[in-house]
Length: 222
Length: 222
DNA sequence: ACAAAAGTGTTTTCATTACACCCATGG
DNA sequence: CCATGGGTGTAATGAAAACACTTTTGT
Image 1 (cartoon, rainbow over the protein chains, first blue to last red):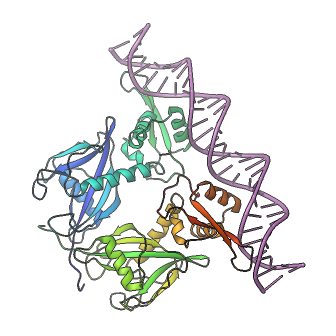
Image 2: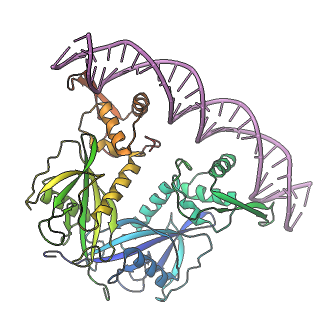
């Protein structure tokens, strides 16, 4: 390793969920410099002998009490000067969780955690704003040709809820009949008993036959 | 940076081109341990104050004499144990070059460089086989919804040449008339004088109006 | 009875597919 | 004159888009 300067490597995670009518991102408040008091993506340094994805999941659990998520590698950020402490390369990951499944609470680090709308986040530490934009662009792209959007829903859900996920992320309304026709024709859903939701007509419930992300030719056009 | 173990970061590049009827990848022969004598992707350690993409391009030039390519970040590999020398995280990049535009020759490092078919590469050092597979999968995917394939052609080319690019990477034949109809309908090409190619009827030449990669809704179905 | 969300089919439009022959050139 | 790749159009099929009203429930 002649000549090779050591570098610090971190893994940060962009955790997103839907709350109400908006896509939100999970942030933690930094309790030490640099950027003390600013909000930042959860994440931290890779430990000796620890895989990158393992780091991402560990930091997420330590800082926010969230475990057991499906994370996907997003992009790696390594411009010199992006961290005032020195050369830091960050491997960013992305994760989605079902609405309400996750109540942010201080993890073992006891730092403040909170959800923020992705379209108007608070000022962020480091280049985390850029990381967030990258995640959002990637999510929108993947939504239209994979089943990632499914992760934003609980085990059982209605077709209207699924449609809302697509509408919020793509930022446009979709035709109800065409949406239902398309989704049902894929044969990915298992129907269940209808359930009363609120003070309206009960809705047919569905679950996904498989939990894995699948690539679908032309799912929903962006 | 308490607790944070330093890590070594490298950038490797998967350079691909079409030669004859096959997609090829550029490899260099390692002249020192580990994996001395084995073929490997060009790449090397990030230097102090050097951006990741800059590293990729510098190593490529030093090791193969190739400059001025368009590279795109592919994926980051960081499993512990993937490099026997220690903890090494590799940010992999991907690049495409036009057939024949690049004659591999020893760079300043004076190592052997050569093209190999991507479907049957020689035994590779480290986890470079996995990196190569990742690049191939990504290229195939991107080919069907972006204009990346264009980079595998010279400034001026025929529609048959463009079609051959798609056929080789997708691994299936395409209908000539439908292909031409589709491509021309996109309005991305500028026609030029026909040129005699070989001992056949001269072919209409085209160039791309823009060199940048564009996302096209349904370009060519994989 | 009304407010709120669930549910349901048909027609039009457009893109994709399948398919076969003549043309121009060099040797 | 022949081998080789260049070039062209139409009909059938299937997917996506546009579009409005009835149903069920809680209050």
